[in-house]
Length: 169
Image 1: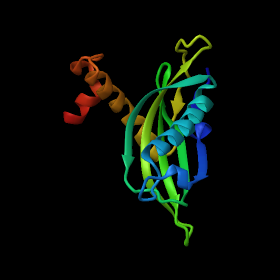
Image 2: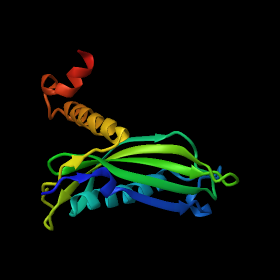
Image 3: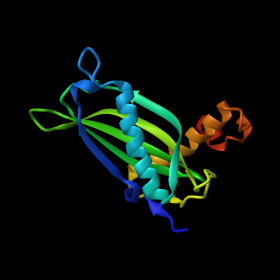
Image 4: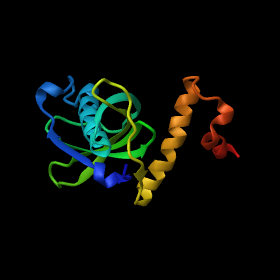
């Protein structure tokens, strides 16, 4: 299985915020944004693994800026790290200023997907090779996030979480 780069999984989804997708103060519903991010992230994970993928978890979502009615929203998703059968996908959400056309980062999220076969059993995925400095930062942090998640779920002994221990040493 050939290693792949984050760039090979890059997925960009651009859409317009319509009235039926907004709350009473004319901002995009958070759930609508979560669904859009899930679709973008699943495409990125599928591009990396070339397999059927299922959402395993929503690890982090930051709604830093509201997304107003009429906004052009762009979601950029890339696999940030691949494990045995799972992949972490990091997303940046941008909104385009109506007048200047400038793109402003509004939100970010991290989802985890698992590659499966036709019967739903997990299958191995290719290794990810980070190239840019940002990709390398996200790649390294992905292991810490995974270990923290496993410790919190009781699936990893804290003393075995080597990446987490390294932060405090």
